[in-house]
Image (cartoon, one colour):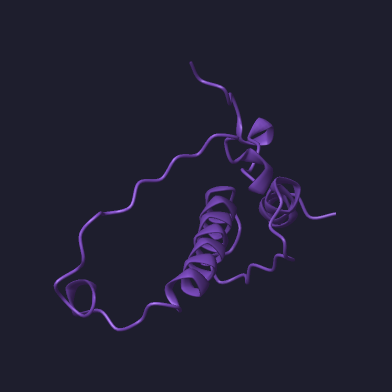
Length: 98
């Protein structure tokens, strides 16, 4: 069943949305390699993940603005945290300036 009918009713998941019972099973055997697929960065990827979501939101806002008739060269400014209200405001700010 579809729980969200429109972007305005979408609830962004938070830490409180983690299930009460969350079972994780780790691989029981040792890894034969020093790293996973010869990777070197083991601490930085979580930092880069957050910035990728932020940039994806900015790109989506820019695309929505252009679809609404705004100039594609107009910069997208959003304050953090990117709540649903702020994202919607960033989209409609350019389309319907006040």
